[in-house]
Structures are given as structure tokens and as C-alpha cells.
Amino acid sequence: MQKNKNYITPIGYKKLLDEQEMLLREERPELCKMIAWAAGNGDRSENADYIYGKRRLREIDKRLRFLKGRIENAVVVDPQDTKGKGKVLFGSTVRILDEEGEVKLYHIVGVDETDPSQGKVSWQSPIGRSLLGKSVGDDVLIKTPQGEFEVSIEEIL
Image (tube, rainbow, N blue to C red; front, side, top):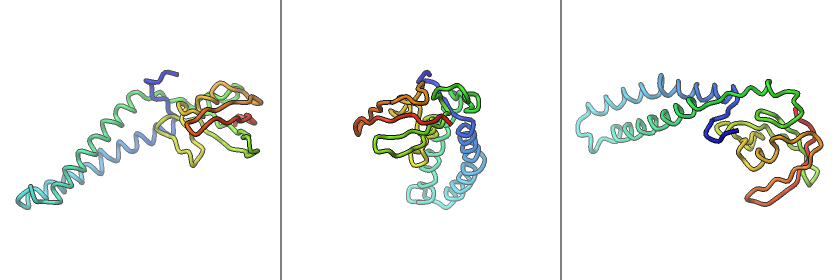
């Protein structure tokens, strides 16, 4: 996988599109109305509503530029297409057994979709990189900033 591409699942791609749409169609127009109202109230240099509104508008525009780039570089990979391949691939959910005997589930997703509390790890993370390409029964050494640990792949869901 190339690092300049934004590999993402269909669900993650839809979330990016939904956020972009919400910012463009709802939040930004409402904010523009509020800024216009605040600008009509007189001295803009001491108008907190105007100053806050302009700052928030810059934040929204920055986020929209970011989302546009992520969407343009998106390569949507459907996890259903990787089912039954016998190897851990992008979009796979992997059940592992760690050194303490704990069973954990990791879902290999795009950078924009990561949520470690939900077991969603990026394909670029140490865990994701270590698991990609491995098969059921493989022992995998994972090197993280916190140290190394070994896991065994129990199942690819």
C-alpha cells in the first residue's frame, strides 16, 4: 500500500463525505449569517460575536480543505472484497491472543477511521503494519513505542 493514498473503508469514506456536507450546507451558512449580523452591530474590533465567528469560519474552512484532500486521495477498499483470502488485509478484523492470554479484536482500517478504544487500528500503525499479510496461527512480534510484545493470530473474521 502506498502512503500517499488515503486507504479507507466505505463506512469511513461516508463519514468524511457526511462531515463535509454538514459543514458546507449547515454549519458554515449559519455561521456566515451570524457574522453578518455581528458585523452590523458596529465596531468590529470589540465585537466578540464577530471575532469569534471569523475565527470559527477560518477553522471550518481549514477543515473543509483537509476533508477535500482526504476525499480526493481516497481509495475505498471494501472489507467484503478481502474476505476468505486467508491473510490479514486492509479491512480485516483479526482475533489475536496476546502474551497474557487475553483475546483481543483488531480491525485494520484507514488513518481517518482509527479508534483504539473500539479496536480500530490504522494500517500504518505498528499493530496494523505487523499484522498485515499474516495468516491464522502466525506468531507476530509487534514493536510499539511502549515496547515489544508477541501475539498469535487466532482467527481472521
